[in-house]
Structure formats: structure tokens, C-alpha cells
Image 1 (tube, each protein chain N blue to C red):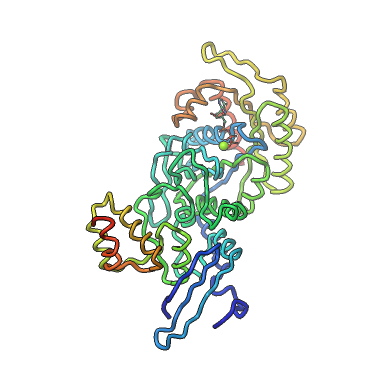
Image 2: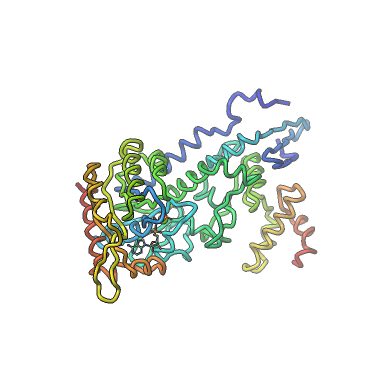
Length: 149
Length: 296
Ligand SMILES: Nc1ncnc2c1ncn2[C@@H]1O[C@H](COP(=O)(O)OP(=O)(O)OP(=O)(O)O)[C@@H](O)[C@H]1O
Ligand SMILES: [Mg+2]
């Protein structure tokens, strides 16, 4: 099963389409608005958890106007479940759960540390605007012009 | 393609399992905490946070290990009062290490997550109308994280500084069934004393949490020049009678003290310098009564 498409959130609902990698058969998952909000307000992950919740997960992902780095040495969050990842990232707006390929990560790490967070955010914003869920070196190439990397 | 109604379970989210795991995490964390004490009032601005801060100081001076969690999600003030507002908590394998003030008091507050002091606390949602509908639930979730995900370590007492309003206590009690007791703070006016009656009723009848006692705050003014005390309101003394009427202990009067207001504003410890002042002595006496209640 691979993720084919994620639409939304549009007025609080999302549709996420998965496709079978061998026959192409696709399955859509739809979220209902109130249900999505209720479940998110409880601080639970839609689609289940494969990993324990990260410390202060909700505070670090859902609070608006939060400090750039409220917690030092925070580990990157991620989930194996594509549904959870897509939903979290679509709502988070902060890029948590966005997958970075090895090559892209290496490139990001070559950027001086003090500008890295803002570059990362710009790349993730670009990816989100273009409906991408993984950032690889070609995504970075695509935004390179704008950022002067 | 499956439709929504074909999904028999909750679609694999295991919401109940996840909520149970949240509870278990909270219980695990509190297993190293001997006592949890909430500080509440029926009205705002009577000095809950200030009393929480100085009570923590006084208990720390008795060599207690003290933590404070700021349960006032929308009006956090404890980080400022304890002087840790600019600290950055550190992530460790056991959770988030809380900042410690000069007296070793560990503090966790929403304030440590907010970029700007004056900005309103908003949560991400597709519309802010919607965010407001779900807000109480999100706030409880935030408080749960502030308590459960903080690496408090072993504590003798965790003080919970509640937002104003008697209705907040039952919410907290449902989150923390192991609440040892509540300290009720009142101001000297009869208006705030009516609110106190409501608070006591809420604590004993609804939340079923023992009332450790009542503190009357800002009942007198101490002249900074000569140290003379002047009563601020003719109702002073009523708080004591009110406590007796409700069968709850009266813990003491804390006078209005300019140095206390200054200490709270600047994040400087108060008792370190003013333990001998009238307010200082009142606070130490209150802390002794609280300690006695907890260790009885
Ligand atoms: N005994 C005191 N002497 C001098 N100033 C005091 C005293 N108690 C409280 N204050 C001051 O009164 C103001 C309100 O106190 P505080 O913030 O503790 O109240 P609160 O009940 O926690 O308010 P809220 O309901 O908004 O949470 C603060 O500026 C504080 O410094
Ligand atoms: Mg307060």
C-alpha cells in the first residue's frame, strides 16, 4: 500500500487515498470534521500509534505562536503509519512528520545551523503547498532558486 | 471501496487504548510524587499564584523537594514569579526536564512554550470558532502533558496553581484522582468570600478533595517605611469565621507587602530576604500547617 494522494484539510475534513503497489487498487479514508477535532483534542493519533507519544506532543505541535525551540535537543517526531503522518503534518503546519530523504537531510545539514530551521520550514511549506509528503533532493532543487542555497 | 459505515471499529485508531496509555503515563509520573496540592480561589486576582510561589519557597526551605505546575493555561504567571520564564526545558529520555529556580523549585508552565508574553493562547484548528468549541478538552490535554511529560523526579509535593474559578477543581480532580488536598485563597472583601464558600462546597461536595485550609491574602497593608500594619477592609476576620463555619482550618492572613509584589514581578525569591517580615512569617506559618496536614 502506498500513499497516492492527500486532500485537505478542507473545512476540517481530509481524504487520503492509498493504492496497492502491485494492482493499483485504491482505498480512500475520509475523516469527519467533528470526529477529527474531537480525537485531536484528546491528544490521540488518528490511525493509531506505532510509537509512544512524544513528550509534550500536543503543546509542541498545536499551540500557535509558540517559541521556536520550546524544548532543547528535541528529537524529530515521526510515525510509521502513513495516515497518522499525513494528518498530523497537514494540521501541524510546522512540518512535524514530513519525511526527509537521506540525501535531502544531508544537504540540509550542510546549511549553517542558525539558518537551518528557517530553510527547513520554507522547504516543508513548499512541499506542503505542492501536495508532497516526502522531501528529496529534487524538491530541494526546486526551491533552491528562491532560497539561494 | 469501503465506506465510512463499513468500518466496524474506530478505524484502528484505538482511541480508548491511547487514552488509557495517557492515564498510565500520568500515574507513572506521579508515582514518585508524594503529595499533589491544588491552590484555588473562587475569584481571580486574589493571589493564588503568589501564594503558590511563596508556599513553594517556604516548603523548599524545610528541605522539601517541590514542583509547581501552572494549571492556568491562558494566564500563566508562575514561570515569571519564580524567575524561570526565559529558561528552555531540556528533553531527556525520561521526559522534559523542568527549569529550576534558585531555590531548587521545579517549574512547568505553558509560559515556557509561548513566544510572546502578551499573545493570547490559541490552538491550531481549521477555524478559531471550532477551536473554541474544543478548547476545554485541549486545555485539559495540555495540562496532562505539562504534568505527565515533565521529568519531575521524586518530589515531596507538587503544587498546582489553578486558574480562577471554583469549577476548575473538579476538572483537575478527574485528571488527578490522587489529589491530596486543596488550599483555598481569598481576598478580604465580602465578594471574594462568597466565592470562597462556593469553592469550599465545590471541593468537598463535588470534587471530594480535602480542604487543607483557607488563606486570607492582602488583608492588611504593611507600611514599607515603618512596618506598621493597617487593615485594608472592615471584613478582615470574617475569613476566619467563615472557615470555622464550614469546618475547614484557617491557615492565616498574608498582608499586602510591596516587597512580595516586587519579588513576584521580578522572579526573585521572597523568603530569602524577607522571612522575618510579617508576610514572611505568615507564609512560613501557613507552610508549617500545610506540611503538617500532608504528613499527618
Ligand atoms: N500579599 C501580597 N502582597 C502584595 N502583592 C500581592 C500579594 N498577593 C498578591 N499580590 C499581587 O497581586 C497581583 C495578583 O496576584 P496573583 O497573580 O497571585 O493572583 P491570582 O489569584 O493568581 O490571579 P489570577 O486569578 O489571574 O490567576 C499580583 O500582581 C501580585 O504580585
Ligand atoms: Mg494566577
